[in-house]
Amino acid sequence: MTDNIELTHQKLRVFQPQKLSAPRDFIIPDIINNKNHSPLVLEIGAGKGKHALGFAAHNPDKHLIAIERTRNKFEAFAKLAAIQSSPNLDAIHADAIAWTVHAIKPSSLVKIFILYPNPEQHNPNQQWLNMPFFEFLLSRLQVGGEVVLVTNIEAYMDNAEQQATRVWCLPNTRYKVAADSQRTHFEVKYLARGETCWELSIFKPEGYKTRFDDWRIESVDEEK
Ligand SMILES: C[S@@+](CC[C@H](N)C(=O)[O-])C[C@H]1O[C@@H](n2cnc3c(N)ncnc32)[C@H](O)[C@@H]1O
Image 1 (cartoon, rainbow, N blue to C red):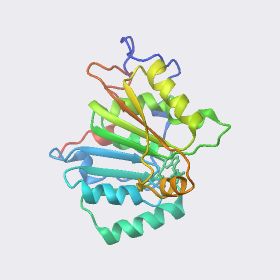
Image 2 (image 1 turned 135 degrees about the vertical axis):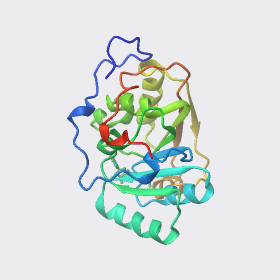
Image 3 (image 1 turned 90 degrees about the horizontal axis):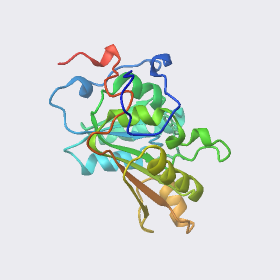
Image 4 (image 1 turned 135 degrees about the horizontal axis):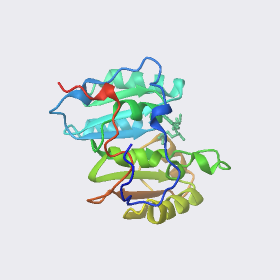
């Protein structure tokens, strides 16, 4: 971790990546150590993979790593991924926090999707922009890279927008999701009920500094 640097953000609590062991059966996908890989995209909480499968099919120039930790959802996703067999998609069964710490290099992602995270309503610590881990996630994003957060919970979006601006000091834009959008199973369900869904698009500007910009775990240091 880098100490004594002038941080761009205001988050005081520090994430402790060194305390996280690698997920069970952890294997680094080939794409991570391939020097000539296409732009890398990460999806956290992919569910049964509707968005991941569509994204991989429509963006052959990008490589998506889509992570889901709930076994039955992941199994449904893995089955469909095996049928679709997109070479630019890795479906991963793991906790995205430990997996990211152990597999993703600094400044290596062009985009991060967090679609309908739906934490327990009464536990604000589970909201992604409230977590110290968000700083680590930002360190993995390239300059100009984007975090896309989507939710149907207005209070979640209000807080995320405020945290992005005031705590993380990041440029961001909030949109309403189009009523005919169908990116994920949860999106289809909420929009069919007539609920409003919101999207926050957050960009990492040039010169953005976190405490993890040079932090790497040994396992991701070999280059092919
Ligand atoms: C409400 S579901 C939404 C699934 C999908 N994105 C959609 O919109 O249909 C949230 C998902 O995030 C997953 N999730 C939450 N925290 C996670 C984490 N730390 N790592 C991996 N998956 C996580 C949950 O298991 C759950 O399947």
